[in-house]
Length: 365
Image 1 (tube, rainbow, N blue to C red):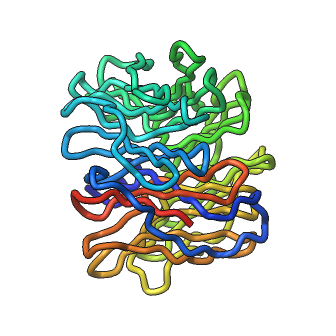
Image 2: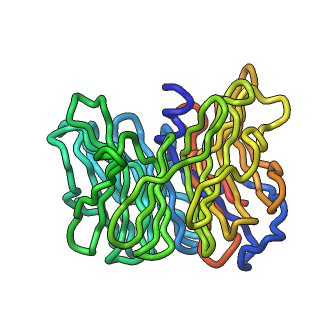
Image 3: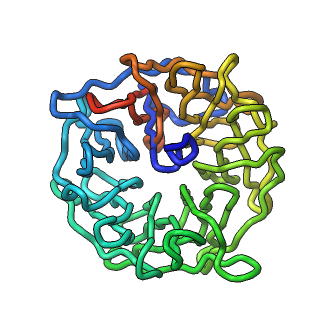
């Protein structure tokens, strides 16, 4: 699996012990590995959501079987069954409380149909997602503002998995409804990997070289700034004055970092492509972002040497990106793929993988 595809399918969560609102003066952090119980093993974690400091749910897999894991404030443990082996791949999750979460992905044994699950505090139940095509429908991410309003995004194709178009659908508490994502010439081409909302009338979704905004009545494709060598967006976070999206670029040789900001009317480069590159790294890859404001963001991902991969978290302080200290346990490759910061705090949690089956990787700042 190539590094860009790996980014798209994985998600990270970040946490810190400072229970105070995010501010522009946020400093760099030292991350630590979160403890887990013996049954908390997986090939990797792809998504996480923490509505409180003492409760998180994360998604992953053991071989072909999807799994969910729960943080109870002291340790991660295997949670209730979320699906059968060879059934589904779940890559996005959003929780509004410890008793209400939605997870999304796709069922590949049914010909790649969009899939959704609902958590009620003790078990998962299946939901019938919207599928615009007979096959090849994929949901990658979801954001819930309440139990009666969630936006999910991904892609669909009517041509054997090629010619993908952006997919968006909304959950009203009882059913999913498709939402057209149209460009100037009809359905927007591309794959949406991430979505962020500040209300039911304001959301942003990004993926690759595609960005789209929701205004409460419809999605519209937005123009992105030109990036030398091309850019790929993987994550987005919104706040009261706009949004920040992150991903990768190839403008500096190898794979480098990319950050762009949405002002409410246009996208622009937040900082020059490659501004977050780790010194001496062959590649620096950003997978997800969470921001308290335009001047206070945290990203997670990985940086690569010529011989290994290492976890990565960086902090934006309004003028520059600064690398945090993150552990990379074990000797295998490492990647932080998903991120969740508990609302109203600086507690963030990141999850990912360590290059093979074993204890789950979850870190908190």
